[in-house]
Image (tube, rainbow, N blue to C red; front, top):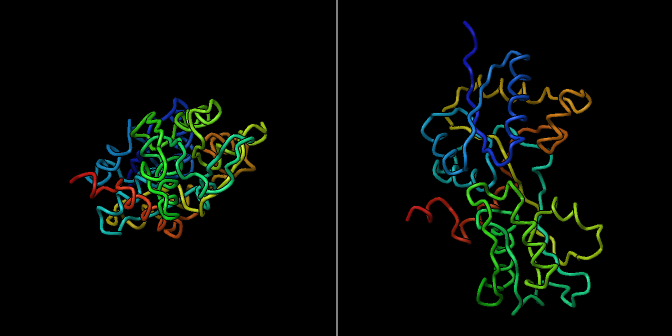
Length: 271
């Protein structure tokens, strides 16, 4: 009897997503683990599809995961994640000639945030500023760039808008994910004044009812992707990793706290 085909969900935040998943599908079939995929326009619909059993596994952002996990009372399965999803960080940046050099000096200033559903460019920095007794729109003014809401910051467009606002002087400071910061820090026009604690980013999730053998086979097959194999590397590079790792909860506690604090959790959204 042939193995059942696992249906994987992913969000189409960029045309390359089709290329990525066609490549992953071909790889899995070649390795005896048949999968197919469904692309969604946003993570909220994807999470609903996973909850309702229309898909078996979802490639979720950290926000999608914590909201999914919250609806399951902490019982969601974490199957696998990228090496780059561990110890992810947020930066707050200013112009290099700005006198601002610490969080406390942001009091009374204008801070640019990315899309409201971007953990790295909005939720995490707002939470950490709150922990430092800086309340949004009380101790500082928020300038929000809600580009591509529903895609949880995947397109990166709002982070480009944050940087543009800082560079033009529209904002005194701005929040971006560390990968975006690393892509621009060499221009010398900006400085990073703060780095968040590390947290985790994307992860493959499933319902706790997923057949154990199917889940194990999916993870084992994913782990066969090898950076040193040129065919595999093409896919890995597009997806932004060198190695797949087993999923774990260690880096999501702070994400969950940030989501709840900033009232972006599933329970708050449905009230």
